[in-house]
Image (cartoon, rainbow, N blue to C red; front, side):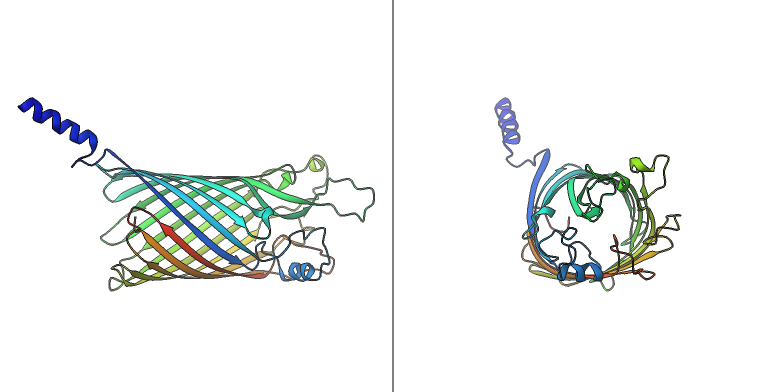
Length: 357
């Protein structure tokens, strides 16, 4: 009799009756629809040239605005026993309705572990195989007549790795420190623009105000270092722009939850500021020498938690970037300059887990 009961218990555990599985797999999916009125961050001068078709060889896109569809799929694994480790994989495809040349696919994998009660470590890797930037001048192209255009499509692939440490110094307080490294390699052309990208970020979340308002403070420092050059620069005079820079930034996010029970309502507002200064020492580079970029980003989002597993959110964002100094009359284009950019998005997401996780 005891043998029979023991056998039944083993079979019940194997079949999952009354016993949680040793490992938990979850799948999440969603889609974001975004209208972007300046997808290439064109300056006002660039927008004017595009609008009146003054340089069709360089401005090859159909429109300067577009509708972007971004479906994603996530796979999440977490042991049910301790919940001290988890792995998340994400696949996101960005598809442009009009300018299909910008379509891209990005993959991400993240491992999180909790070695101590108040500490959590995260390691994240992302891979972007091909991303269209815009059209640049290819100095190495030989043309039969000097007047012929030498513009070529610029694409790069990018690999990023990030390490994050999160800790809770006191009850309801939370801090996080991140280091991110990115390697950007241009495909086929424009090897002088290959970059190593480094970023340090520190964020702090104090206790919620009256239990409903959550604030997050953050600061950032980064370097972008050009690490390649054209063949004509070996023993010659450099004729390509130096894309290296140094950047500082900070931001604040406020999140207000009007209703915690389902359906829930959450309003988020974020403001970020970043100053980037070009570090080139070439005084003849009038586009970058001694110049800086100042960018302010404002975002608002209203999210509705329809249930424990469904969420719908609408957001609006504006990016305001200003380039210090004035453009010269002989300057025909810039890689980055003053512009305003607006984005309007609608997001729908589903997950079998609780959305707060």
